[in-house]
Length: 373
Image 1 (tube, rainbow, N blue to C red):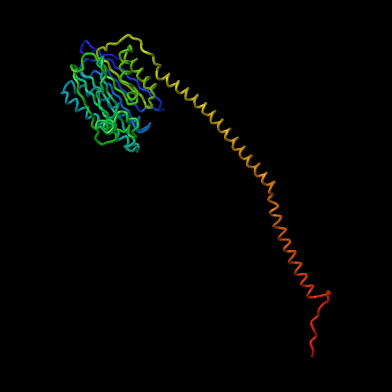
Image 2 (cartoon, rainbow, N blue to C red; image 1 turned 135 degrees about the horizontal axis):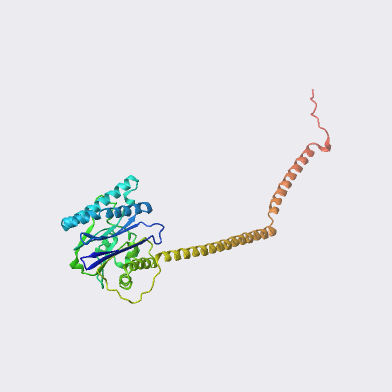
């Protein structure tokens, strides 16, 4: 999208967003370019939702919808009032978004700890550029040679780095590396950071790049710079940045929103081509499916081998038990005990019989002695 700017410059915007390796996309992105050459000329905005699919998607969508509906109002205020009034209106807009997310959470019984969104916006006016942001989505400025981060992350990691509590190489090991210290939808009063730049400060030709953390955490400054100066257009640059983040193993939704003011000096040097992210996604899915099939085959083979080993062990133990029974029959022990009992019983009967014979010799029927009178 192109737009005349101060009669001799253009503003071109482009954005790309993709769910990446996740099933759903909780990022929302918006770019706007005006047909007039006064007031608000262009907008770039990225909201990175948090709290799971339904909550995160809803929070980021609410934020971007408010930005869309604010275009005319913000432009009118800039044209008719002061730059400070414009900044105040942008700050109030963030409060409105925050209130709307709170209302959504209440209406849908969602705890505030489970819903929220970042929001970074670049507001391009005739003579000024305002960057408003909350959370850890970033804005970068590129002047044709140098890339500069112009927002400061509202995150536990950034605060720990500022205070010298951790070092850069320790970030990946931290349990709180994704924790935010400020975002929309969590606190009752969430105030954005706002930076003001004039056209004279930024120059005539530059690019502004907004990124979600699913993009910038997986891109080096060199990769961003090369994608800007070696690609033929910002559409190609945006597509390439998404693909590079994906190739570099981004595990989050990936979003970029880019604007080019004037004309960046581009080099015609050939740059290594990168497949579009959708094609990469299909290849990854196919490879994952193939790997899954291979793992299943290995699991079946391992289960078969383990089952055979268990059967062999059981047969071996049974064979050992049979050998023991052959050498030392268990029945013999039980038979001996019975015979001993039988012998004892027989002996007892024989003794009783002999005693009876002794009491009645000759088997004479004994009668009681007659009573002598």
